[in-house]
Image (cartoon, rainbow over all chains, first blue to last red; front, side, top):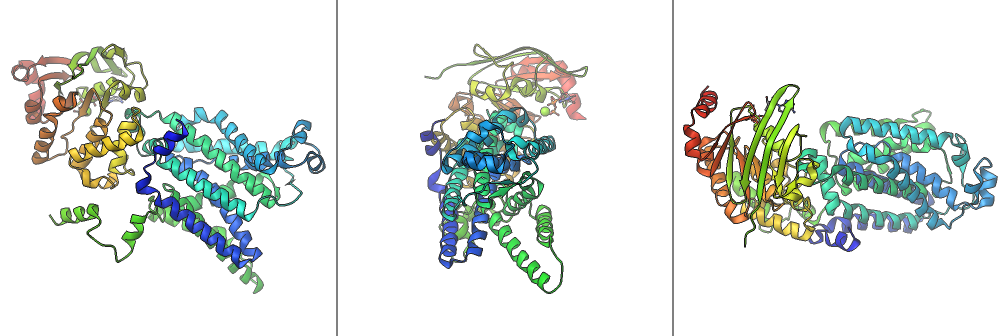
Length: 365
Length: 243
Ligand SMILES: Nc1ncnc2c1ncn2[C@@H]1O[C@H](COP(=O)(O)OP(=O)(O)OP(=O)(O)O)[C@@H](O)[C@H]1O
Ligand SMILES: [Mg+2]
């Protein structure tokens, strides 16, 4: 499918409001924080926005296919390491990671290209391993994805000639990932993930999520449809990983494992995995919550209590509560649209909403 | 001008670990006709539909649309050759809106999105689901779910439509609505329909021909009046229906 058809595919007149709202909220928060000019808060925002990109990429496959994609955080790790290897100068690499293969040491790309190259490496790895896995659904699918995550993690943590093995991989140099770069990428990724979801390809994947058999007998090759999304999702994860490593400046394989995955999962599930708005608000909510809890922890620490780890426990309990009582998250799997906002406002006029009016008539009858 | 197509099934067989669920069944259908596929519970009607649409592999036999043999194809390619189905146990995309459900039927056979949306909206209007277009499928009444499945199938612009017990679970009034909806369909949409149902009133007033299965075997076929009088059918079918 070419790009022109892809764009034409979108039923924009109805639904473009979601993208506009999400971007507006993100940019407004960003601009306000920039104006505040408090480094500590800028740091929280940049980190949170990198998380947002990760969660959006996670949503692209998991939310639309319904397959619990454990391996995702592995691709974030691959992107993080690969982009760092591309962006660091040979001299710096020889200094920081003397064990590295000479041909890797000699690679060097400018930072923006290195980010893209990191994402491409993640996509290539995904493209090579994913095809046979895409047949598998439900718990079998989740278990194989989990096994794949372990494979990726062992490679990242043991392959000394590439990732510096279990030792910390220090990027050195200056922090290349900036506040505005992260914000810009996040805006693009919101558009991309949303357009994908509403496109024919995304719609087909959502159909396979709801009923694989009916999707098949409606002409959908679910293996192919899943494959495309899986590789794209790995690409966004890899891109986010690159932004992350060039922000944090020192990484280990352990940064891309179960803790990180659990955090992404809570954000997506609490927000509502079936919608882009869910990914957005889940990230926002959990980020605020964790920062708040961290302040509480700090305060307790000062008064003599040791309460570290309480943020994780609280997030976990909230996740469990959501899974029990509201499995589709705060958004209920729906998108934030103009209509949904109007419905929430008490002034909403009855006449303008033929659908709910008709329903009301039917209820009365 | 309307193009004529022919759907043929030749000597189709399928066993499940020794049980012959479909045993040497052959049938033939042209666009514009309605064929009733009937038989007691467990006689192999659903299994036959599953094999014809590629959802289950056959043991032997042939299924063709015009000159294309579709029985070796993966199930997802079958709709593009003009054959779609509905399910006895309704299978909708429950988190998608009614419109999206119907759109899937069209894009599944390669119709472009804009055209698919137009077609789907038109079909939903036609089936009386127009004002529910934006609602998720999971909240629909039983009747609406049945209709939405038919809309999704029609959105693929099929030459042949297989309906597996579309009236199951509907009350008498709703069944009459369905009858009124299906009756002109072969003519209007230039489609051939195979309908499976236990509601003999619906079958008798709808079908041009009947095909009767019992224990996977064809026991009678032909005009409804003749089949009805066939002693073997009376024995197999009415025997079980009366019980
Ligand atoms: N996947 C399967 N595995 C094993 N046996 C099966 C399978 N599907 C169907 N059968 C058996 O094949 C026989 C035919 O079943 P089928 O569902 O085709 O009957 P049917 O005519 O559609 O019945 P009903 O009117 O109740 O829908 C039954 O004995 C059933 O138990
Ligand atoms: Mg059946």
